[in-house]
Length: 326
Image (tube, rainbow, N blue to C red; front, side):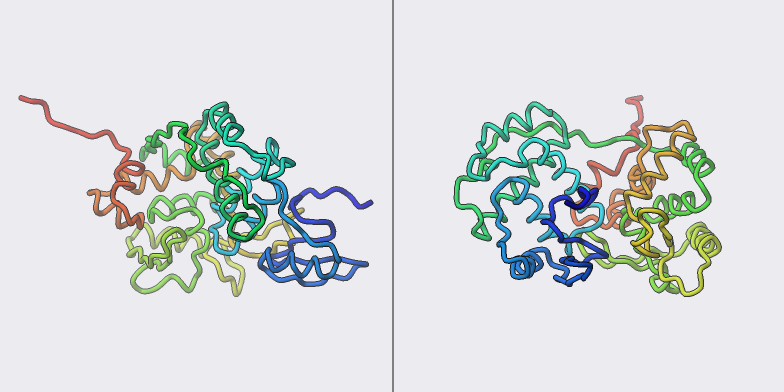
């Protein structure tokens, strides 16, 4: 018997995910199965002779994630995997047909957290996918559930003094990325995927991961300074990314490429504690960028939001000022 898996435990025996593609490994030979999980499972079944079926909650959740994986942003995929871990710890071995609405209700209400809402949303999507693919024909226990934990918009505003303290506490490379995110208002994943080719005479060009909207952040003196710092800090000849990662140790096989959002946040957690600001999240820098815009319209344009209500509710975090009656 081989060693237990440390990663991708949802995959069947002798099937591995490596650099975005699936493989079946037999007697030291790696048989390519493709990049799409559903098609890879069919090829795997043909090679092994045992059909891979979706029977349990764990099967359904991971089948849905792998189906969506090629189209998901890195941060979204990370969130899905985190929710899948939570769900499988409670419902993993339970057959889809044995799941009830009461079980889902207890899970969401007992947790009482925003994360439980996210978990329930993933479970609902997994059941829908299972029905659409013919793996499940019963009653979806996630539908009609009249309960949702209250979600309050985050209102943590990072002041200029706090931003300076965070930049000083961070390593030069992390400080450069943080300043870039605060100036451009980009999502972490979008900022990390900026290529050198995206730097034009007009500004920094990119496409938002959520809406696919084409954006150009116009040059300012400070933005040019940050980009020049990035070119000085990352100097490998022929590099492709503005912010390049060269992972070592257990992540070395990923090769040279952009930072992962989870890896960047791990570095940030160290820097914020060092700065004495343990409650500041990296995403709060995007909130600062939206809050520091002169108008709601400017903030919406900078953040690339299709709905102005999202901008006002989540990214205009400064206290509203008003004059006295007299």
